[in-house]
Length: 162
Image 1 (spheres, rainbow, N blue to C red):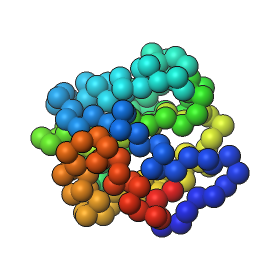
Image 2 (cartoon, rainbow, N blue to C red):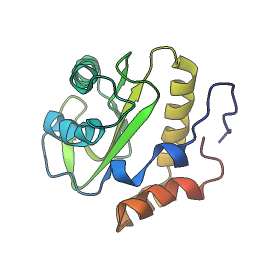
Image 3 (cartoon, rainbow, N blue to C red):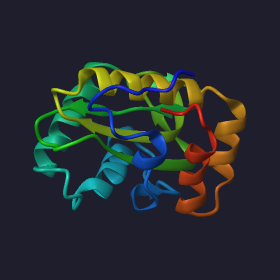
Image 4 (cartoon, one colour):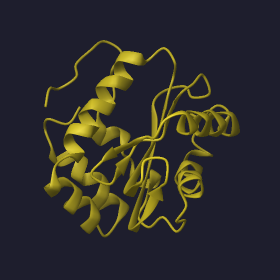
């Protein structure tokens, strides 16, 4: 996995996955409700300028195309001017959430908000996350994490992570 060292790309996965923005057990079982439960972690984030508008764009994007990537992972996301910098909230569901638009049961929901101007950085981040989360070992570690800190630490273990 290549490391991203581009001007303006000052954040790596270990910095982006913050324990306070990790929900270890998503309670909702329906796609939209589960995405909302995870996205709500960003509601008071100082880098989110207007949560409701960000969330509306997130759902609009989700309606256009399934954001499930396979392996029980989904990346609901919005490129929006309602965030100052890239933001990420993560939810884990042991039981799984059916993303009916793809027919896939999702165990990890990564809600991503990216400023419109950060196209390259966004693509690099999603690519790196997708490569990392393809690993059965990584997903098993994430599923076994007992605390949000343990969950976030999995991203710090991989020196190849963006």
